[in-house]
Image (cartoon, rainbow, N blue to C red; front, side, top):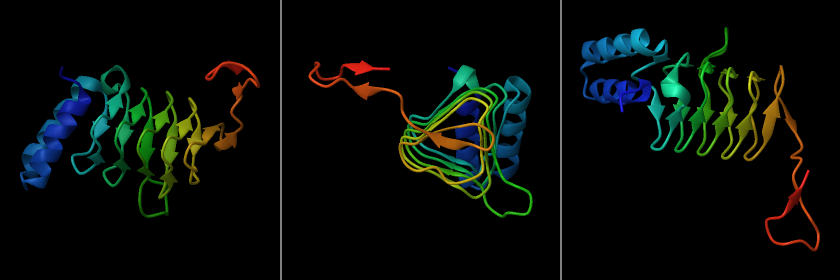
Length: 154
C-alpha cells in the first residue's frame, strides 16, 4: 500500500545511500500527495504506523521514532525555538491526533500522548499525558479484587 511512510522509507534509503537529491524529490512528492512532511533523515523504526496514511503529520529531520509507534493524523514531532535537537520516541508509544511533541525530549517506552496534547518535557515509560502543557494523569482502570484475571473497573 502506498502511504506517506512508504515514501519516507524510500527517501531514507536514498538518503543513507547518498542520493540526496532523489531523496528530496521523493519527500516533496509525498508532501503533495499526503499533506505530510517526513524528512528523509528521520529514523523510523519497524512496525511504526501513521494513521490514515500520514495525513497532516510533520516529523523533524532529527527526530527518532522507535518500533511499533502509532502516530495519528495532524501530529507534529518537531524542534523548539532556541533549543537544539528533536524528540526521541521509544518503542510502542501511541500519539493521539493533533498532538505536538516538541524539543529535545525523550518519550519513554509504552507512553500514551493524548489528542491535542503539547509535550515539551520528558515523558516516563508507560505514562499517559494530556493537556497543554502535557502532564501525566493516573490510569483509571484498576484490577477488581477477587475477580477474574483481566477484569477491570472504571
